[in-house]
Length: 313
Image 1 (cartoon, rainbow, N blue to C red):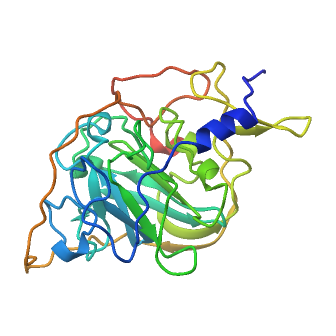
Image 2: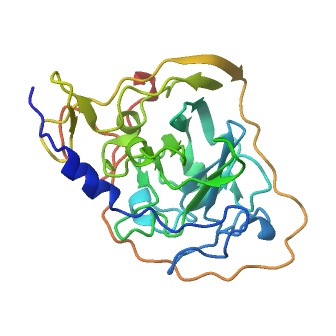
């Protein structure tokens, strides 16, 4: 089978796309991009079911956040203004409701941290049957989807750091998020943002089955879209070119620690002292995208349909 091969020139073009604003993770600005729906200095305002926080924290299976709509809307329609939903209180975000997470698998490699799983994300304003789409720090204009979205983690050593390269896919029943080591010059490759219709399993191969666990893991063989040829060179497949290659195989995991579930956090009874001001909701600049797609074809869909059963992962 032959694939379209694009080498150094394509890689150079990809790296030229900027990944949003650079901020001090220990002193976040109120907003980081013009036209931002919410805010980034979230902790000073407290957790709230109406929070407009747009800063994610990724620390552990019991302490991570996902982007999802602030009101009921498809991911394709809301990608520019989605807000943070977190498993742990204290980040100034919305809290992931009880029953929303059905399975979660947290893996850490030298290149990235990846969290995959299933859930009922209608509890987080994703319409039932929505195949969802991709969130990333680039977007069509370099301001990110959502605009002004910031991701932080202290899991790569050296204290709290801004994660410049990351991507997240979420549908009504499945999610995946990968954040890439900020010290790795190839972080942009491992957290590619150009395969927005290819979905979770293709971009982030891993465990989408039942259960909750934390594992160490090997890095998958190649970054998304890259393939080693028989002559030793690396080819880069670009979305929309037929035929569509299979994604990488999931990497081996080890040292797994299982737990029964993730306990849902609760909102504090006290209210924050002040409320932030925010800008108006930006308009959507690109068409809805899907999280699941068979790897044997390359069709781009803007309609929704029932997500594939998670048992195939």
